Image (cartoon, rainbow, N blue to C red):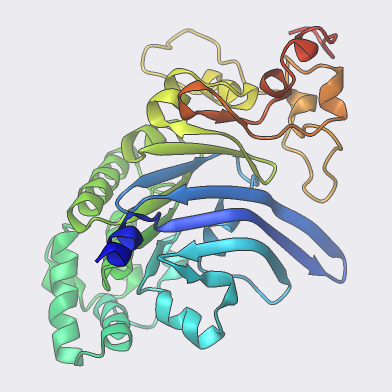
Amino acid sequence: MSSQASAADAPLVEVENLTVRFTGRDLDVSVVNGVSFTLDRGSSLCILGESGSGKSVTMRALMRLFPPTARLEGKVRVDGIDVLALEDHQLRRIRGGLISMIFQEPMTALDPVFTIGQQIGETLVYHEGISYRAAYARALQLLELVQVPSAKRRLEAYPHELSGGLRQRAMIALALACQPKLLLADEPTTALDATVQIQILLLLREIQREMGMATIFVTHDLGVACEVADKIAVMYAGKFVESGSVEQVIDSPRHPYTQGLMNSTIHADMRGVALDPIPGAPPDLADLPPGCPFAPRCAAAREPCLEQAPELTLLPGGQKARCLQYEAGAAFTQAPLLKAS
């Protein structure tokens, strides 16, 4: 009894010092550089950051969706399973079963030569061993669950016959087919208009609560993060630079990069107010600077930032930030600024 209780209390996802490196004839780049986090059962984490920061690669590492040129190091455990130690046939069993993923563009993720019903049914037959007749009945229930109108008719439709919003709902139904314990969503509303976007987000949040799943969302949209997440991790140059609850990160951002994201976000009451964008561009992951990778873009950067890579520092209340101003304290504030703020 006690061992079962302790297993249920353990985090569903445990990632420790994860590194993902891609190598090839003319390629050697580390895209994820020592990411660590845990996620409890039924909780929701949103990974926030600019394009190219390593968000999607971190997500795909949880399912090992990489070519042979990828090199993964560190620890990735999902429901007690060491994902990095699994053989290919074992990975096929957990993909879609234990862990499912909603991809960014359903038109390229769904197979164009099979109907929606065939694709959902095939997943159920493979993972649960049920008949195709029973699988089609479940597929219909899933389309109704994600509020697809005329669900029975949509089962026989091909992906190109559906609108963007309906394709995304079909992708969600496919991801939920085997009742996964962990749902990954890679910018699931990027290609949708604002009305459909909020419908999808509210639907995902409702289904997550009903099914008790843990979810990880990847986005660059602060509005999405506020809508779906319990916790937020901000990513830059392959590392988490800040993490905490939604209230902590949104209301009191501590890292200069997070503050820059907040300042460059449009709000409803900003008519006539100029945005304050982050200057410069994200660094080249194949040629990162020796110090803080955000220093060339940071108005608060000081001389030590160019030489010393900051560690993730625990702040009061459980919030974390990777910045020398918290790690070095008074010594940092006394150092000269690199540029006028």
